[in-house]
Length: 311
Ligand SMILES: O=C(O)CCC(=O)C(=O)O
Image 1 (cartoon, helix red, strand yellow):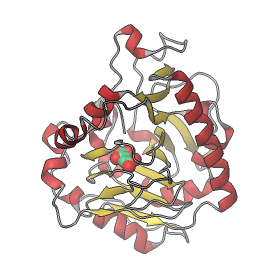
Image 2 (cartoon, helix red, strand yellow):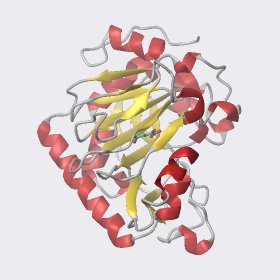
Image 3 (tube, protein in one colour):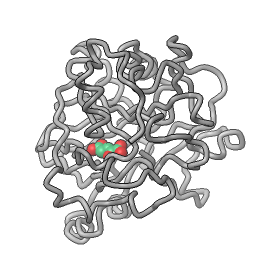
Image 4 (cartoon, helix red, strand yellow):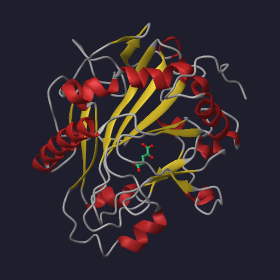
């Protein structure tokens, strides 16, 4: 399988981690962000969650969207077997803030973390130093909620495929653990080596949603992390999120998806020749196709728009 040579390792992205990323489809870099930074992220995430709670339903302005799931949405986002299991339990569920995209246009803490020089140290050995970003995303998993992400490959969300050249070697997804990221509070699970199980054909929809095919795979394991650790996975690595069965501990994750700029026709700049690019001015086309037409904030459902969750 095609991959760049290992020549730029550093103390965060060691040779072993670069090797693990390409061989197993993931790696975890411990202790990238320190407690003070994680506290700032927690505060920001709490504010965005309160905003979602006030909005009560999924709301969008430009690339920024807050996903608030009602009962029907929660059921739709579950694996069909789980949807059957939880139907009664969900009868009285309140709207639940599941996630958000592009807080960084409006949040200095989020914008600084996505473009932090440590992120470049992690990314550069994999995709170079001219980097754009497609995913800037927050995930919450409220204790006891039925929020989950059935097993899938992120290639499903890199649309249209023609705008992403050589996706496998050009794309890296990163997740910063904000809370302890453990099995009990709904850690992301992944299947090491699953990026090598299939041809890298972005149009092959049979490899996108694979809960049934992989839920009993002996390789499946939680990507356990401490707050401040950064996990990486590829567009073809099977992964998804478990349930948060804790009573009190949330599971907050800050996800940033980066792409080699020359191989992508979309996205916001993160690093240009190694220099940080903060968000500024008009928003770029990322995943919202009407970015140039609709500039005001709106509830998509009121306009008959069914917002598909991207990852
Ligand atoms: O938040 C999680 O647990 C899962 C996230 C995920 O599967 C994704 O972003 O693709």
